[in-house]
Image 1 (cartoon, one colour):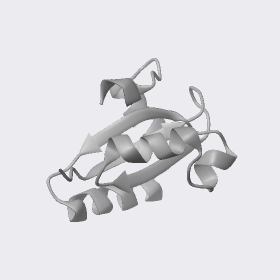
Image 2: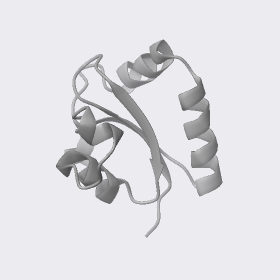
Image 3: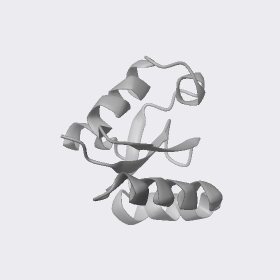
Length: 94
């Protein structure tokens, strides 16, 4: 079942952030956690899912991803801390 999501990965509280979009959040986060796909997240050790948001349509998720990427770091941190103040890894709650 496809479920469009926007998500943020990090390596530690207030650490490096990565914003992404996917239709299969558990599988995509697993790829980040294991370094299965070389790139930014594996280079910086971004293995913690710290925020995500589900959407009805992929177009909505992509639009939200673009909005977040265009925003500043403080806004992303505020978004994370509103729902996950301790920067817990949310992967186990999927």
